Structure formats: C-alpha cells, structure tokens
Amino acid sequence: MSPSIKVKLLAASLLVLLLAALAQRTGAGAAAVARAALGLAAAGGLALWMVRARRGGATGRFQLPPRLSVAARAGLSARCGVALVEADGRRFLVAYGDGFAQLLNALPPSREGDRS
Figure (cartoon, one colour):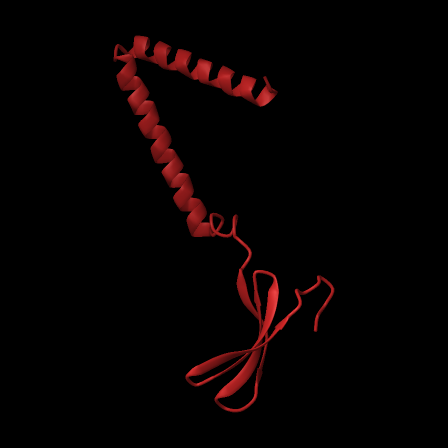
C-alpha cells in the first residue's frame, strides 16, 4: 500500500473511534452522532465552496483549450471581412459578410513558432 492510502485508512479508523467515543459519552446513538458529524462536514464544505466561488478561486482551475478560435481578422469593407480561424489545430481562411460566410482556403496546421 502507498503511504497515502495508509494515512487515509488510519484517519478513517480514528474518525470511527472518535464517533463511537462521542456517542458513548453523550448518551446518544452512534448513528445520530455520525449523522450530525456528516451534516456539519457537509455544511462546512458548502460554506468553503461558496467563499471560494465568491473570491473567484473556484473558476478557472480546469478549462479545456478552445477548440475554435479566431486567430486574426481583417475588414475588407464596412460589411465584409476575412478571418483566420483555428479549429482543432487546423487553420482556415474564411470570408464573411452580411448573410454569408465562405471557406476560401484550408491552411496547413499551425506550428508553435509560426505567427503568420
């Protein structure tokens, strides 16, 4: 067993012993004490989650890379333009305007150092 599993098993065993001792000392049933402890832990976890969400710490930890992004855009007229679009690692040159969009050219995949 890895040390982390041993530590988790030891902590769970100590928690069970602590709950049994607390139940015996207060005269309440072990199930009632376990329910109360579980309820307190859930309320504490919810409060911690809410505090972290308000601070902005809960957002942005895990984000998938964007599968579709506009790398560059240039206007040709007031209502038309071209855009270099990256989708799943491939680049496309797209013309767009009022009521239309047309694929002009599929370009080779971008390289890390390429800024064209």
